[in-house]
Image (cartoon, rainbow, N blue to C red):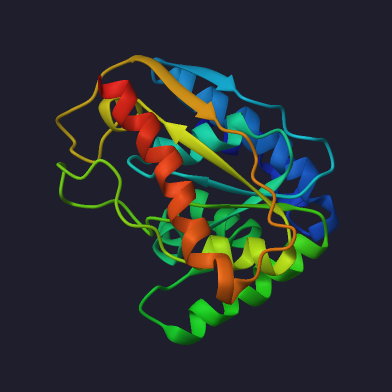
Amino acid sequence: MAIPILVLFPVIFISVLKERWYPLFFAIARFWSAFILYGMGFWPSITREEPMIKGKSYMLVANHTSMTDIMMMLIIAKNPFVFVGKAELAKIPLFGFFYKRTNILVDRSNARSRKAVFDRASARLKSGVSICIFPEGGVTEDENVLLDSFKDGAFRLAIEHQIAVMPVTLFDNKKRFPFDFFKGSPGRMRAHTHQAIETVGMTVLGDKARFRESVRTTILTALENDLK
């Protein structure tokens, strides 16, 4: 993780000084992600139901099982996006410095922090940047849970800003690099991007819950079919 950051430090540092330079940082982050995944012996394999339209904002949502989910999402999406993620990640040496300057951090135990997330995410969406959220809100400790329940945040934001939601299923990240230190192995990491779902005409009060569950069903069905 540290090698490409140290080598490219001057360029990375400059790229985070101004928000309008974020596309440069995003391009470097994609290179960083590929360096880490391939360097650890993982081979990303991505299938797509449709390509992402250049210049269009999306709400990217995916299942969350591994630290490598971050790297995979950066490789999957060519459109610049920011993560909405845990504030604790900002404590990681070196990585955390850039993470907190370029992404939207949330302390889920703090109501004020959760409110601030919506304000910052709204501002980034208005600037044309996409958002990526893992709607499970974290990685469940119960290994028997294939896909945890989804929280509302991603779907509320998508409906309020009338942007398309693109579900992404990550099949192998948990098997390849789980949070259990003594498990994992090199190999292929498969991902599938589903067809984007438009939110034009939806309302938060009338459609949010139904929409949230329909997206969860899309990802859950893909995971269940893969197990078969």
